[in-house]
Amino acid sequence: MTAKFRSLLPPGAFHEERAQEQASAEQIATLDTNMVRKSKNPDTCPAHLLPWLAWEHAVDFWDDNWTEAQKRQVIKDAAYVHQHRGTAGAVRRSLGSVNLPTTVVEWWEDTPRAAPYTFRIEVQSSEGVSDALYHQIRQLTD
Image (cartoon, rainbow, N blue to C red; front, side, top):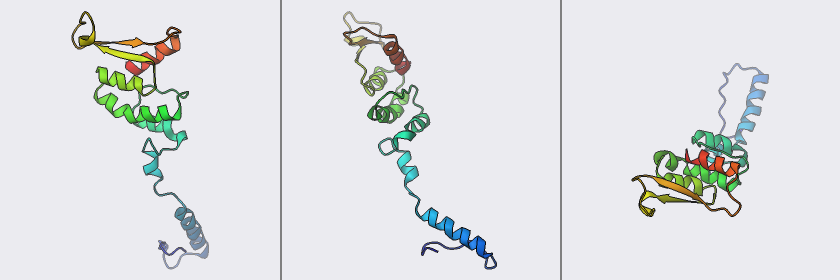
């Protein structure tokens, strides 16, 4: 058995039980003990676990077609977006994390001034706004 391993079996344990314990100890010794810590961090989480990390961080909208960098950024921004939900800043952060071609214009920036505490979203696109893009913007801002 390994030097760090201490048997939990009683002195009268069978040889087969001790062999199984030793085999298990060797497998446990090869495990990455930082795996849980790595999987909880958006920067170090393995790519195939990112959807589960997004679910844990309560990401409202997820697109499997996003790049890995976009997915990681959406997860990082999830806490801010939830804390500031409904504000122009949260909408900017939400749309910016997936590089959508939009600008958020707040009520006091509009000419003439709009209703207080409101904002609108301008989409920059030479091709127009497709249904898919419109749906994605709605999902990210609702």
